[in-house]
Image (cartoon, rainbow, N blue to C red; front, side):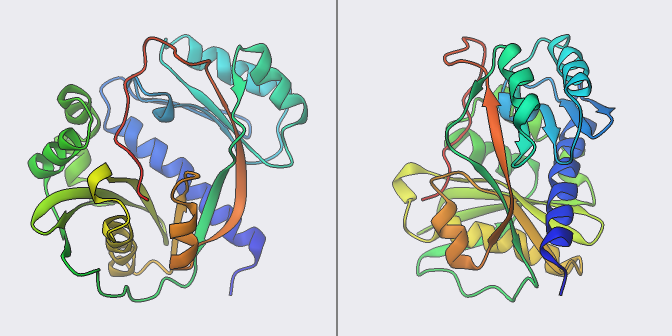
Length: 264
C-alpha cells in the first residue's frame, strides 16, 4: 500500500498531466515550468483551465516569473498552492491581484480502485465520441464554441482519454472524463444537469471514469473535488491526500465563460 506522501505525489502528477493534455489539444495551449511551479495556458476563457500550480516547495521569485508568463497570454487564470506552502507564495498571488478562495480544493485518491457498483435505477452510462459529448456539454450549459474548443477531435481520440455520458431515464443528464498518466487515472469534468442532481448520475459517471482506469490497469484513481461534490466522493471511498489553496481573479471578471454545474 503506498504511503500518504506517495499517494499525494501520484495525485499531483495526474493533476498536472490533465492540464498538459488540455494544453496539448488546444490551439493556443502552452505549458511552462518554473522550478517547482507548473504553469499552463489553454487559451480557453475559463480560469479553471489556465494558471499556476505549486505542488512542492518553491520560491516567490519562481511564482512571480510563472505568473508573468501566464498574464502575457491574457486569459482568466487561477493559482493553486498546496497547503503548507502558501506563506510568501500567497502574498505573491495577492500582489498579482488575485483573491483567496475560502473553499479548499482537495486532491482525493481512491486506492486500490474497486469494481464499480451498479448505477441507480434509471441511470445508464456509456463511453461516447466527440459529437455526443459536445452536445451534452452544451445541454448542460456550456457554449458550443467553448465545448468544441475544449473537447476537440484530437482530445477525444487521445489514447489516454475516455469520455462518458450519463443518462437518466433515457435523457442525457451528466458526463465525465478519464485521463491517464502512467499508472494513475484521473476523473475530470464531472458535470450533472441541475434537474438530475441527487439521482445517482454524478456517482455513476464518476464510477465510469474510475472503471476506465481499471481497464487501463491503473490501481489508483484521483480527482479534485468541489465543495458541493465532496460528500459524494467521500461516500465512494475517495480520501483527501493533499489540499490546495486557490487564488482567483476578482469576480465578475467580465471575460470568463461559465462551465456546467457540478454534481450533487
